[in-house]
View 1 (cartoon, rainbow, N blue to C red):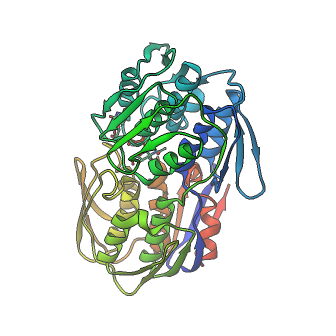
View 2 (cartoon, rainbow, N blue to C red):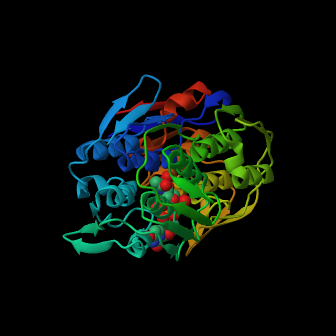
Length: 417
Ligand code: EPU
């Protein structure tokens, strides 16, 4: 199994290009199921989750063609197998995103229940509730959700919980439904807006994406289109924190700072100097960082996907920070690993109290999810001596060539098998 070996203590310096967003690319790829014409998607990040999604779509009969610029053309001329099997869903929960498009286009979908996951239970009841409101019947059989509908009908759906992929699934389903659907208490994440933009370019009638009420007027059919995936705000945030903790001076290009207000505010609060343009961010750290309290919540508040990375920052900052995780019930798995590096963290329930220490010391650590792995890489970059991060297959799910990008910024980091 691959691991990353990091010799810490180098300040990151230079330019780094941000890749397309994983969490925008995944739903956008599944949107190809909604039309028999080609959907060309540009700026698709090269990640394991993206390969998994492409495999899943190909198993269903979608043809895919990669171009040499990081784009992919998908064509769902005929869907032969409207099934997301357990073997794929268990490795990537975002597979559930095929549910809405399949029922809408074919009137049938069989998607494995995802089961538990390292960061929490993560049920999909809201996805199902929405589809049922649109007239689908749902049956559970042998671990699979089987959804059927002659043609989905527009409905008024009030989500009990703000859910990102739930909102995306229902928006895609509603695009081909008969009549108007209103999703209330919708997720406002930028990735929802990016998916809506792609669907609109395919002929969907959607308004309100980016607010908590999205209105979708169903159409008979959607057509082919070309869409470029937005920059990854979590990859951006991860490089910003890496630069900050190492006392670095880094310019991130191809980024979208407007999607990162809460993260940039927290970095400024910690004492980091930040400058932004439309598509770039310059981060410069001078001297010691200050501890920052934070509480994760749906967009535009502080993202749960940046909680672990800021925990790494707080480990070496001056003062004590309280970090409250409100989205997932088990997203502190990185804490014990950070303690192995010498961090002073106490966890009670969904709150972690972090007392900054003068230095972390290298050790072997491993992570159980993607963002936790990223936080351990950051810890390794700032720790004294050598840190080995094991099980980096989690990292490969969501960060494109992270060790290459970090090496180019001067980090001493290498992949070993
Ligand atoms: N929830 C329910 N019922 C549902 C759906 C969600 O109770 O039907 C709960 C979840 O258990 C969780 C909360 O609602 O406690 C929010 O979950 P959400 O559905 O918003 O998460 P998701 O759509 O499964 C996406 C991202 C995650 C990110 C979360 C929160 C994708 C593919 N995944 O997941 O990304 O953490 O939103 O912002 O978009 C990651 O990239 O590392 C990652 C985990």
